[in-house]
Image 1 (spheres, rainbow, N blue to C red):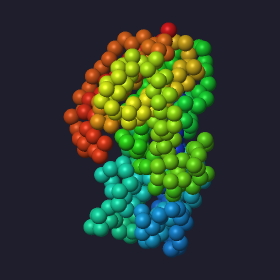
Image 2 (image 1 turned 30 degrees about the vertical axis):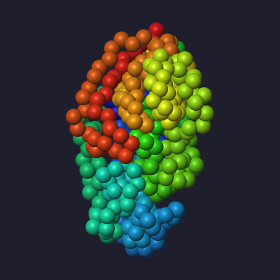
Image 3 (image 1 turned 135 degrees about the vertical axis):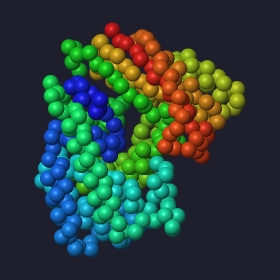
Image 4 (image 1 turned 60 degrees about the vertical axis):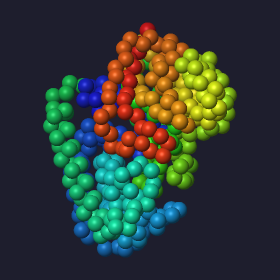
Amino acid sequence: MTEAIIRGLDFTGIDINPLAVLVCEAKAAIDAGADVNGAAKTVIHYLRTDIQETIDVEFNNRSKWFSDESAMHLSRVRRGIEQVADRAARKVLWTAFAETVRKSSNSRTSTYKLHIRKDDELVEGSRVASIFEDVLRQTLYRIEEYRKEHLAGRARKPKVRIICSDVRVAKLGKSAKQHDILVTSPPYGDNQTTIPYGQFSYLTLQWIPEIDLPAGWSSDHISNTHALDSSSLGGSKVGAMEKAETMKFTSPTFAAFVKTARNAGNTAAIQKVGCFTYDFLESLSQIRSQSSSSAHWILTTGNRTASGMRVPFDAICRDIVEFLGGKPIATLQRELPSKRMPSRNSVGEMITAEATLVAEFA
């Protein structure tokens, strides 16, 4: 989204995760000129004068993830943000608040999953306000840098639309006069066993008021720590073998993968990869059905391990694009020498390289 609006290009983004959408809405608000400095002054003033000791948010196992003292101080920050009248500016403040929640909760910051910190790593509740102010200060600095570098002299203000929805059913709108560019780095497997963004977002989403969450979000997705990931691509194993059979006719690469897995007696790999790739096919089919006849797609993929088997997702992705009528014109390889995650997790080896496919539709 940022790269599009810097260039004055209209942008439509889709994500099922309301926190991801909120972050994009905050970025769009910054680009549109929201008075974040004025909003920050309002919040800081409120924090200096609020002496209430109430806890404004309760949810299942709240005390496990936030001590009463931390919850009290987070409630003060939350009330301060609610004092800001401008909803666009509030969205920016909620992103700073989200980082404060992440840093001050009892969940480890070294993983996307919710794992309790060791006792000597717990953050004192009295530090919540200072953590928020530090994050806010950095946010304001980066906003100023961005506006100086990218907004001055821009010829066209782009239209930005962020949709909080399952991409498989999202309504994008269609214009025959446009040339569409799809740029995405999709999940490389189901969220539950790769990077659980829903689990990562769960605690923050409990704290942000419903009124400021994006339109289209579902409370069902934050009913428990795994709900959002279960609703994401590959999150459900219902009809797994039927989905795998469909994928065999769509992707020769997937058909070969199934043959190898069956010879190894690895039904779990067929089910897991079949569900994810089927959901991915549905996603791209939905996008293609609503896009212009003329388009370019740029998709970055990685080949992960599922149930002990390496999944050739880059080749499966290419098969899907060709199935939908696209013509691959280039593939770019990129090594990943360092990442903000371990080289292995409980599932298996992590991805160390990515492939970017460029395809055209005419």
